[in-house]
Amino acid sequence: MKFENKLRIGLPSKGRLRKDMEKLFLDKNITFENLVNDRDYIGTIKGLKDTVLYFLSAKEITNRLDEGSIHVGLTGDDLIQEKIFNFNSKITKDLELDFGKADLVVAVPDIWIDVMTMADLEEVSNNHRDKYSKRLRVATKYKNLTNNFFSKCGVVDYRTVESDGSTESAPFNGFSEIITDITSTGETLRANNLRVLDDGTILKSSANFFSSKVAEWDKEIENNYKNFINKFE
Image (cartoon, rainbow, N blue to C red; front, side, top):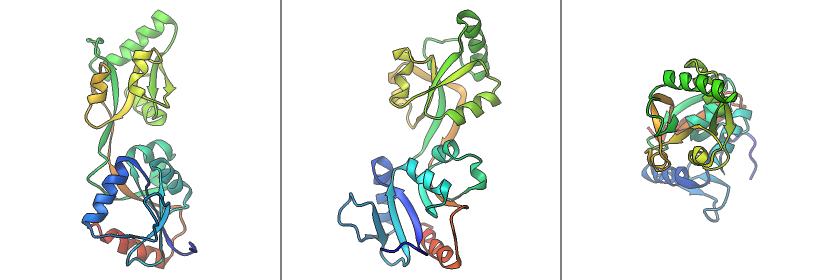
């Protein structure tokens, strides 16, 4: 299959996003073709010419949009805004979808009964620095969004700790004092004796179709994209 002059679309390859995406396509009578099985990573769409699909992780879709190697991708606001520097200059959100909804939040231990807002957290972080000569640790997979939000709220006495696993367990395991993490229901936070600050919502995220401003577009590719996106309206 030759990919030159084709509309290149990145779709989620696994997990909840894949299942929700498949349901959406089924509802819109959009059929995948040239897939031997559901583990294939390249395919096409029935009735849509000069288009190739890549089935990728949500993170890789974000990276491909950033570098312009795909024209369109289905991924989340959280990854776009976290992973792509100056994302507004590179990415356009074309269609918000009704799934993949979650909030990126600041969560603290339940026992911090006097810490309800980011202003309270600022005071606690200052006290922590004075008492222990160390900065408050914030475990997160979203370092850039966390730093931007904390800076906006005037919280400076902290440091981020990169989390590769279950972020919500970091305070319990002694790896951090608080966390920022993505949550849809809050159940996992509550199970780990954490709660969200009253004004601690960093970002409301959902799954969306994004297009890359840095990809190479021509009239034919643009027309194919319009035909593709119109299927969802």
